Length: 449
Image (cartoon, rainbow, N blue to C red):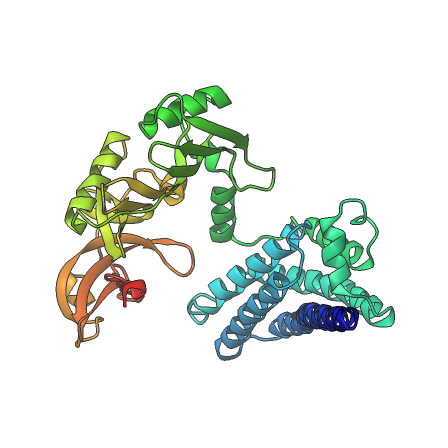
């Protein structure tokens, strides 16, 4: 009797385990099928958008009127964004595809820069028309290569999940049809360096890639960099610090450091330039206690931190509070003109005033003394371009980068509509409304609701 009961219980247990295993298998398959479907859709969407992009660039070559050309180039910009979004959904993060992504970015920037300007007053130059012809030729090459990959995917019923597995395994990554196809595309794009994108885009890319050229100081060893960081952050000299060099694909040459502080139960991660050990970004990870400092007191801590590290003449352009952290953006102040491209972002813990976050890439990349001209329109002329419903609270002059990547001198007006605060920039030369920004306030802590 007991034996029969045990056998029955065992049978029920085996059946239950089998059912559980079956359900787990079903759920795992459902996840894999969903991922595969997402990859397939993104890949075929990429082909569709590249074909549409090639066709639209080709049609611009036959256009002459601003009424037709501007919308067409705006559509080129939209299609490049769609193609980049498609690439972002594919499992290509472990595979070199950066040249193609950079090429798409530059197409988008070039088309947008031309689309938004007044083409009646400033029509396409011969160089820009030549660039469009080259873009059409290159986009045709990319489209054709992607078509080959698409044909192989369809003919051989290839799976993107196999690509993901191949990329994760170095031994298999060299033998995958889809990977080989995308490598061919990226290698082909690498040969398109002769494209003349125009001075604005070229300068922007050069600045991103040549941060180290803008830093003054000698190149430091890892040991010297550690010593600078200990001094900069006022750390215990015996703190545990791991240091590595940023990868070859990084936009700048720097040391990456990871620091553990057992006394404060915190960890700190940061990048510093190899020349001079200038911090590019810092992130402190620790539990923040009850708020003891006001936002104004935290701003004073941030100012003192900048001054202590020889970043001077900085003014707060934006401040906000997120839970128990004060977040501040400082910009360079040159003779009462705020230089917005020279920005530093700082987070301050409101329990004890620690600098919990810091980012200075914009400042390190852009900072220099400018030759500032005078406005050619009056303050009243600029104010006429501001929405009359805005109640002006503050005003001044500032330099910003417009949508074309150019630095422009603007009248800056800070004002409110219905308890919302806005910052409005009016070009000090041509009365154009260059930018309108909605300012952030204090973020509600939803965890306590």
